[in-house]
Length: 87
Image 1 (cartoon, rainbow, N blue to C red):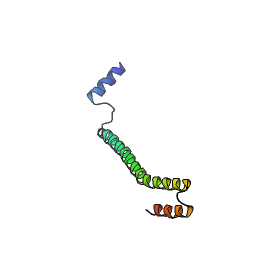
Image 2 (image 1 turned 90 degrees about the vertical axis):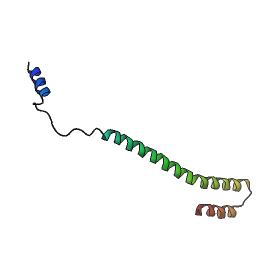
Image 3 (image 1 turned 30 degrees about the vertical axis):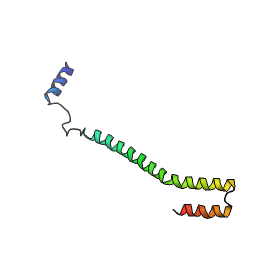
Image 4 (image 1 turned 90 degrees about the horizontal axis):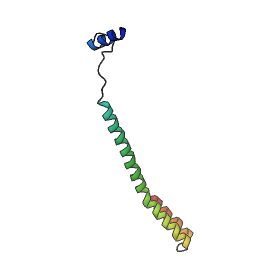
């Protein structure tokens, strides 16, 4: 019988319960929106960084291939590599 009394007291709003401010449930969607935005920004900046260095690496690789096949000598390779790395 004690349980029924407790339930009736809680239903009436006169029992021992916390009557503080309601939990701000609108924060959950904002949290997930911020999390997805952070992931998108990280992916975007990573791709930009990779694209920015891809041209330099391709140039250095082509220069190394030319050195390997003998079309340029070591001195010309170093000079052109220095020019590539300045940019």
